[in-house]
Length: 324
Ligand SMILES: Cc1cc2nc3c(=O)[nH]c(=O)nc-3n(C[C@H](O)[C@H](O)[C@H](O)COP(=O)(O)OP(=O)(O)OC[C@H]3O[C@@H](n4cnc5c(N)ncnc54)[C@H](O)[C@@H]3O)c2cc1C
Figure 1 (cartoon, rainbow, N blue to C red):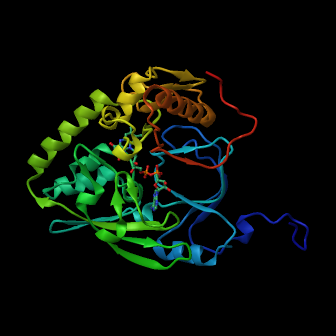
Figure 2: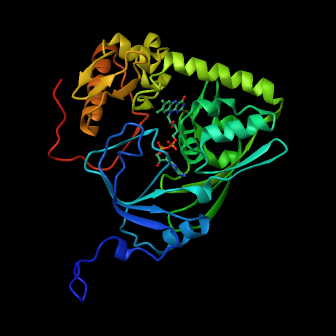
Figure 3: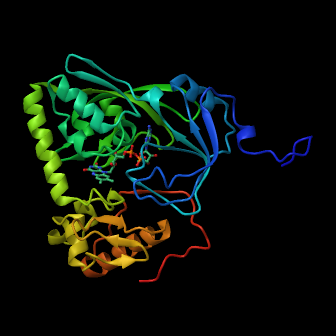
């Protein structure tokens, strides 16, 4: 499209005036944990919830919107993400404590929330110290580990819908299930009220140290990765009772995929439900390797693994990934 003065009209020209920042062609490979992926056509960093509302209510309805946290559970494809990628920043990173309740903005890091809870002598949120994401990402994924998940600590959350209306959601409205929230995919969480139990900083710290050392021991946390690639299968997804008891990593191991490579992507030797970028992987390598694992696991066990990592954006047609 051309304007009257014959300059091409860019996507930013079509977006509402906001107080936050728009960036064209914003690299996402510097943000995502996998360190791969093409750029966002436009990235929007709203200053606060009011600014985000102005954006959502005023943006053209044909422009796709994608929200990301710190990119620890996403695989951005090499062709990038069309439309606007919303990244919440400082204006959403508040952490306030009142008795056993913690009010956290959606951009607050899970680790910072668990540290604030520890300092206030509140237990129950230690598991968040083991999850390298934000509260927004944790709500969307019902993130959890070591026997606790968001469902156990969330009292309520706030979200904006696709046109900017504010929604106050009680726990039941969040429809949490295993690594999933039933809240519409195009709603953006802006914050949550979490609740723990009264304890002492020393006791909470003891549990956090346990979690840290267990993670160091079992996960490749010093290599670019996206955490667990596939969800653990539910009984319904499994044709036989033996397989139904198996975790995703066990099925992957049984199918002989530990250490499997495709281009620069590799199945972690340490935890075979983790894919790692050994240095020069493309998103196509990682996705192709994931699909190869699914194929081999199905052949070996009859179980269809489902991606837990969210794949975003479009492929780069010039990159096909390396055949195994
Ligand atoms: C080394 C490693 C270990 C991990 N261990 C665990 C673990 O033990 N348990 C676990 O559950 N996960 C784990 N993960 C996965 C990941 O950390 C979690 O899923 C986390 O909650 C993702 O948060 P994020 O901010 O990085 O979200 P992103 O990865 O940026 O986004 C994930 C999804 O959430 C959506 N989203 C993000 N912010 C918002 C928002 N404000 N509103 C609405 N939707 C939003 C995105 O659109 C996307 O669909 C691990 C990842 C890594 C890399």
